[in-house]
Length: 55
Image (cartoon, rainbow, N blue to C red; front, side, top):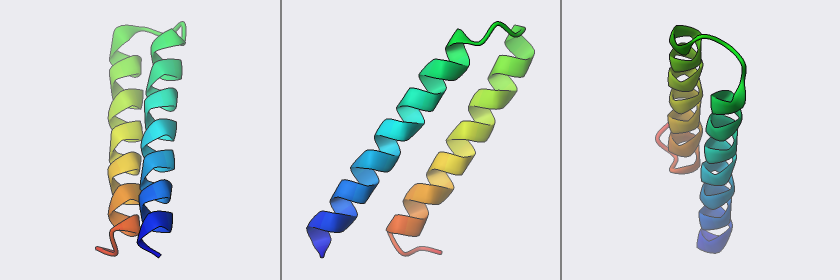
């Protein structure tokens, strides 16, 4: 059971990193890119907290 939680956390972390990389590649201005990065990080933190049974 603990290994499945660790695998889920790892996969979630990798998806967050991938999405942040893809946001960097978008042809939008810096302000919108920063807003998108903040949104992705917040969603990622909430997802990781879900796996740690905080929510």
